[in-house]
Length: 258
Image 1 (tube, rainbow, N blue to C red):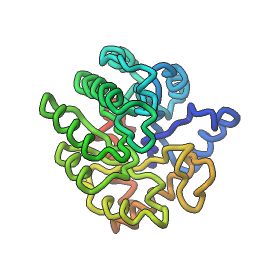
Image 2 (image 1 turned 135 degrees about the horizontal axis):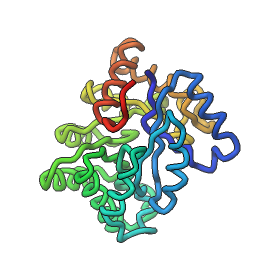
Image 3 (image 1 turned 90 degrees about the horizontal axis):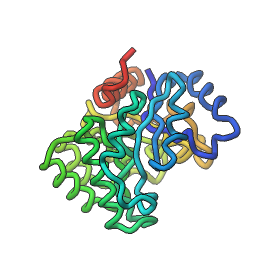
Image 4 (image 1 turned 30 degrees about the vertical axis):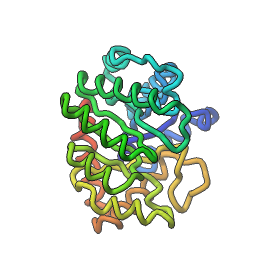
């Protein structure tokens, strides 16, 4: 089973042909998708996408948008997570590349998500960009207060943060970036990821894999990500598909496994 662990089908890039995009995904062999919330304030759009029987969703606020809700409480996220279609908390984290929200607000809102993940038992979908030291410190500090499950989404950070997160039992998802010619450092980290805790994603509409780079990404392109993961790890396609499927259901255990 092919599973896209991170899609943004609520994005305006899909407003004209969302149902056709979903149909192409299913035709390509993608059987499940996780629709990712980027703003608690617009969660209704995310949840609307998850009405589709093959799509589940998360609840959370991206670090870019943290400034919109600096007092976000864990309880708000916990309440949203009571919906049975919600299978994760996030996307949340730290982004020091764009700094679209103040760093202290990003950290505060991120910790609220962690508290919600800890209380609900749902996995935390983590975004980390150019914030390796701060991210590792927060994950370790919060984990010491009480365990929670972690998915390092679209992992492109360094080997040191990967090792710190892996020591906390984190899962990792691989995106189309792994196919980019200049991404050898990313591929080197992928080679060392815990083999039982790797899954794949498109992060559509962003980061289309080669040979579609530069186009709007969509879940139908996921087989190219899986093929690159198989190549990097020295797995057959069948093995890569089985391993990523097992990893997905081990983490997203609110979703019934067919």
